[in-house]
Image 1 (tube, rainbow, N blue to C red):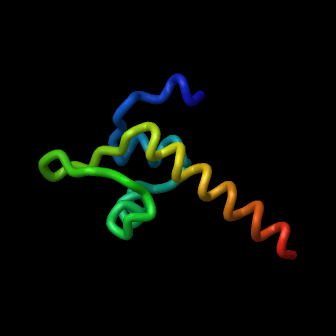
Image 2 (image 1 turned 135 degrees about the vertical axis):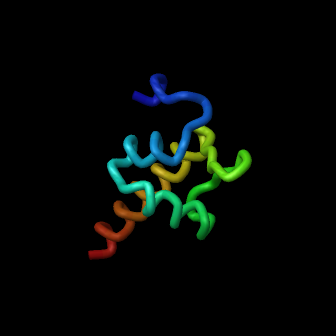
Length: 68
């Protein structure tokens, strides 16, 4: 699926990919958990940044499971 992702994505596209609401994505962007940039009033997220964020989530989950 990664090859199908556009190079630059909107908040709505990222929310759809991660199966989260757009408000959650905006919160992650504003807290800088997820990298992005503003184009006017709209956030844009590069594919690489999204995949890095997703990998951090996976790693965090795996390390929490290992600690149990």
